[in-house]
Amino acid sequence: MKIKVAIVDDHHLVRKGLRLLLDNLNDFEILFEASNGEEFFSILNKQEVLPEIVLIDVNMPVMNGVQTTRLLEEKDCRIRKVALSVNTDLETVRNMIKAGACAYLFKDASPEIFHQVLLKVYEEGFFYDKHVIQSLVPELGDQAKYNSTYSPEEKSEDLELLKHLSARELTFLNYCCSEMTYKEIADEMEITSRTVDGYRESLFAKLNIKSRIGLVIFAIKTGVYKIQ
Image (cartoon, rainbow, N blue to C red; front, side, top):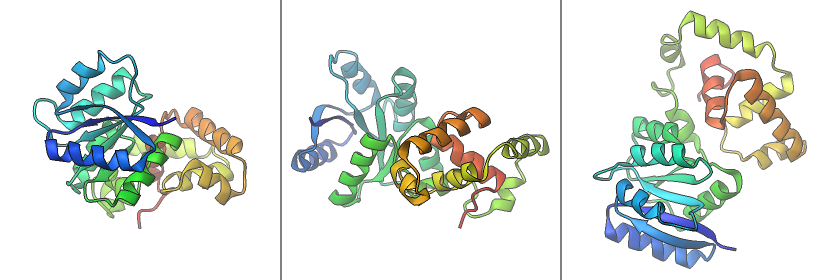
């Protein structure tokens, strides 16, 4: 069964190129295209079959990528949202990820990378490379400057939460800040996928966090994960 995809991009040639690429990859079925977020939702609301992945251009008129991603996340968080852009600006990446994007793909990515990322997003629910992870810190590579905006009260509360994590949970938390999928983390830690699921759910509960991005931000803030 093919993965159902929708494309949202204001450039006709880009949409045509993406359609051609996806058709050639054979794993995907394009349900529809839209030129901006407003048109996308107009079409989506009439669809009986929903897309499983939506490719969303960051810069669009009428309703841009961040607005489209955020609204789609509110409407149906099960739909995977993949940001598309030529923009490598960290603030742009961070805004799309925080809005709910499961991955951030640059438009000059090779067909092989494009294929790999979409499959990982479909199977794992996300794909965050090092560029995306680093974008979550406002001042890239400057942990001290970032920590200066981290209030003593917040830091004290978060460090208290760290005391309730086991050594294996801390190891898992560190791996969450990598590009590895949960299955790859399980292999690296030499545990089952079910155990990884257990670690993830335990951290969600103990830290009052609901997503992997939340775990990454917590790990960076508390110094569990050091930016290279």
